[in-house]
Structures are given as C-alpha cells and as structure tokens.
Length: 392
Ligand code: ATP
Ligand code: MG
Image: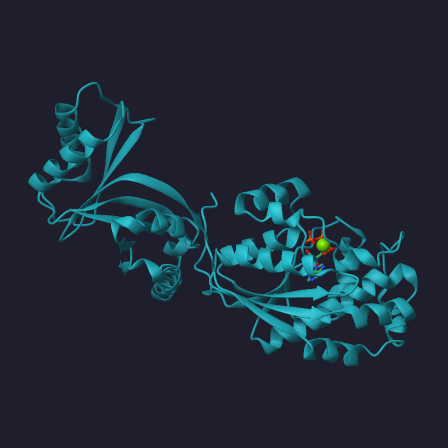
C-alpha cells in the first residue's frame, strides 16, 4: 500500500462551472512549491492526491498546509483494490501501529455501486478494529482517532492523520493586486488575507533614503518573502520616495503633509498596478487607526485614483490584526524597530478631516505628474520565490 496525501478542496465546491480552472491552478501552485520533492499530483472533481518519496512526506504536508484552496490535508494509504478483504487486512496493520483508546470509522463511498453502504462499512470495520486491538472502544462524539475510509471505483483509501488547511481560493485564480507593503503589522496581514481570496500579489514599497535605512527596506523584503510562502512568487517594486517627500515638505502646509503624501503614494501605486496588469490595490488601512485613516481622509486620498482599493483589515481592531500576524509568521519581523517613510515627516497635528478643495489647491504647488513618473522610472524590482518553512 502506497503512502498518499489527499486534499479536500476548500470553497471550490461552490465554483460549479469554473471548478476545472480552480483545480488546475491549485495543482500548478502545488507543483511549483513541490518542484524539488519529486511529487506526483493528480486530481478529480472531489479530491487531489499527492504521492511523494517517504523522505519528503513531512515537507509535502507542510507545503499543503500553507497553500490556499485546501480545506483539509489527509495523510494515509492507497490500497491496491477496493475489496473489503484488502481494506480489513490493511486496516488491522494500521491500527496495530497506532496508540489510541477511542476511535470511530468514517466512510465516504464515491463508488455508489459498492456492495455495502457507508454506515454498513463504518459498523463492519469498527467491529474489525475492536476485534484486533485490546483496550479500545468506539466513541462517535469525541474520538481520539478518526479512521477515514474512502471507497472509490479502483481503490480504497485509509486515512488516519488529518490537518486543517488554510481554506480560501488558489492564489492567482482571481487575478493580480498591487499590495502597498510597509514594514508595519497591518499591510502584510492585508496581503495574506487578499491572497487567501485567490489574489496574486505584487508589492510596492516607498522608501526615503537617507531618512529611511537599508534595514527598513530589508525588513519589507523579508516580509515579502514570508508572505510569498503562501502564494507563488512576489515581485516587489521598491520606489524611491525621497524627492516626493522633500517637495511636499517644502511646499505643502504641515497639517496636510500626510494627506498629500498618501495621495502621491496612491497615484504611484495605481500607475504601477496598471503597468503590471494588477486590477486592484491592496493596503493595510484600518478605519480610525491614525489620522490618515478616518473616513474623510480615506475618501480624499482615494479620490486620486479610479482603481478599486481593497482594505482587508479595514474593520479589524489592532489586536485582531496582531493575532493573524502572529499566526502567519510576520509579527516578529513587523515589530523590528526601523522607521517608515510615513513616520519621519509626521506633524504633531495632521488634519483629521481633510478637504478635497484644499488638497487640489496645495497640489498646484508641486509637479504631481513629474514626481510620479520620476519615482516609477527609478524603481528597483526584487522578486521573491516562495520559501516555506514550518510556520504553524
Ligand atoms: P502598517 O502597520 O501596515 O505599516 P499603519 O497602521 O502603520 O500600517 P499607515 O502608516 O497609515 O498605517 O499606512 C497605511 C497603509 O498604507 C499601510 O498599511 C500600507 O498598506 C500603506 N503604506 C504605508 N507606508 C507605506 C510604505 N512606505 N510603502 C508602501 N506602502 C505603505
Ligand atoms: Mg506603517
């Protein structure tokens, strides 16, 4: 009997007509992540199967647990047939190796012509297990071990180890977005959450050397590599923002510095997004967190662009965002103490209810288009391939 990983799909069951596209994307994402591990991946509408060398099994399981589109990762055995005699003998071998006190058998039977129904198989195999191991009992409500049996046309499968997957849609199936990635806690979480909905990401980071350090930039690149583990690769656009900020500082009243700076960031992000075939901007804004994130600020800042802006953490409070950051492995990097370009020029009293007319009037004093184009012309591009390690 072959060791096998079986994947249950997440929300893909709702994608009736498009399911083929989603499954191909999931397979492609896994193939790219598993390319070094000699893995063979096959699928049908109900399940995906991975067979790999035993020495890579743990790594393959880990990759599956970090890939969107998967509800459950089940690890077990593919039997050479679906004959009940075979199922019984393999099951006996399997339970003898396992330590447990209570169990139940759960059967799924995609071969509806099979001579026993699922409840009959549960009952029958439950009896076989009880007969062949001492000191155990059946507990249907809270068993220590669930023995999953799947009866298919050609083979039967036995699974005893199951792990929760991340859910969501395979990255790339919903197109591409441009993530505004700062070194803070919020934007990597926003990136993760949008990837979970199938959005592939590129990222833009605004840096202001010498006011911001190389460490601050490296921190953002490190965050990119961490979130790349969940998707495919991430292309990061590092945009020099010093000249823009200096022009703003020279020409704009202090209380509007942040508003105008963020309007410039949006313009640059949107232009980059169009050029790189991204359909939306994603950022880590959360309602009310700082002056630039009041509804009035967001509205005045958003006014600069037509492209939709997705704000996955808009309605989460900071503690909820921190919880996710810790779970996905970005928190420790995000709290490293390097300055962000947003923090270096922040006035003590930024305007909380900015007015659009004033923004337009102030922006007359700077060369908006020239600065946007100059920044994009001088971008530096770094690409991160996914680089998973044990995170959960
Ligand atoms: P974060 O924790 O993500 O840094 P924040 O609470 O510090 O967010 P702001 O500094 O107001 O909030 O930034 C709001 C959002 O704007 C960020 O989540 C990010 O998406 C984007 N942003 C801010 N600074 C930068 C930057 N230097 N480069 C790219 N995007 C940025
Ligand atoms: Mg920030």
